[in-house]
Length: 297
Ligand SMILES: [Zn+2]
Image 1 (cartoon, rainbow, N blue to C red):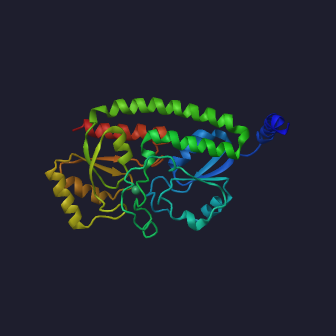
Image 2: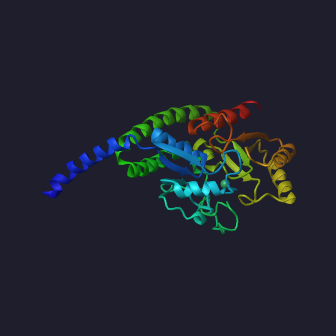
Image 3: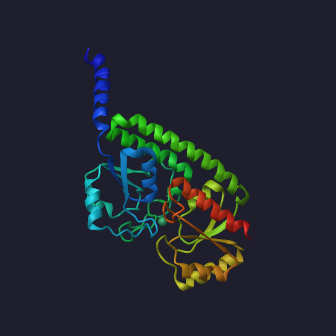
């Protein structure tokens, strides 16, 4: 008998909770990147207030936590992280809130990279390439995980979260169509990257990364390595160098001047430039920038 009544009772309790929660303040979520912040906001809507730990315009690998941020991490209802070796500082904070690792359920690239000590340097891609949010298709599993987690924390709003995500996926699908059409002519483009930020983006649009300026992710090249890279780019007739917003511009110029490559400076994260105001706008900007540089040659 209890089994028979449990469901309606639970539903009634949830409805009551929903009425009570309507007046509740937004869930406080801390995301470790502006990209995850944007995706949490897309699902959470006005039921969440999200803060990103990493400032968007700087190197996301070199986060220096302020005391106020540690306090906010400790007071959060939920922490959403990139995972892998992207946030070695998180273990030291020892957060009490549930931590959603957004890398779960992602088909990782470069996971065969030999494991390096993730604590020796902040970001060496030692567990696979962590820049998976730069394949826009990966927003699907990431927002699904966010939906599950937010619904668990605030069951009365589960339907609203689901509706928000559906609306976001409609925008994403429209974007995917737009970006695919714009990128089709550049399939097979061979490029050198400053940092291995772009393998997911490259895989999505059929671009070929033939080299990276950094010998190991996060480690600047020596002068001899720069000279060798320039020689290889000339020999291989590589015509595109992809830099990130926070790349060392002197090094970018040195490589560009030594070769026939044009430079496309792409934005790795939401809010890295004002135009990249959310996750969809980030790809609109990067696709436009890429195609503009390619079309100008
Ligand atoms: Zn990286």
